[in-house]
Length: 294
Image (cartoon, rainbow, N blue to C red):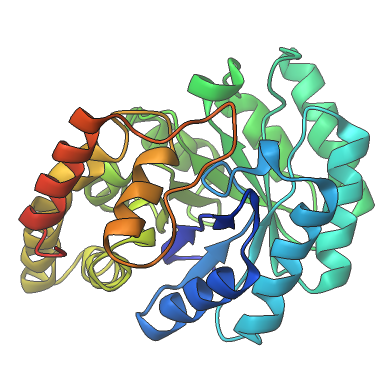
């Protein structure tokens, strides 16, 4: 159910407020272009600067508009266990298919603290939970042993791995087996990630290249077909510069600027994020042209 091209959806703003009409338009853009799942209220959706009501609303809208056509994996993580439980319960009650829960940032919990955090959330909900391991933002790295211990719980099904370390795919597969879901959080390593046993990508690039990312994932996951692997490599090459350009500055500022060039959304982000610099704009335009999106 949770595989392929899953977009980490941007949250469009207008006059510093949630632009609901634009948000709905984006959701239908993904439904029309083969996206396999949507993550509302994640990092790319600027969850840290959404109000609680906005956080709940973007999840509710995604569920309502998708009507069960593709799964909704709601971003409900927090560095407060109590808050994460509240957000997770709301998402479950609203009809989300799964939860994406980031490792607690700033607090710097121990591995035992991480285990207890996720266990408490697990014990309070009844839908699948995907661990979001992103040491570059949260400052802590969940160990494979901690993940294996969590995988024994009823709702923990896998990980969004944004470590950038492909060896982790092998280690996690060896420790937890094929039933442990592995999704990369890095567009630029998705090809090799899938070859090693991954099931897809929670993608930033899919915001602006939905069809290409969908086609890429579909081809890359058919490991036994050489022609499909060649197709995946070809698409991956065309998107390579774009994957890099979207992280020249802090996500999601670059992808929102790219979306504005494609008339998908405004480039507006909320402070403390700011819009990208002129030199970054040049690189993004160049990468979009290379991918034949502009």
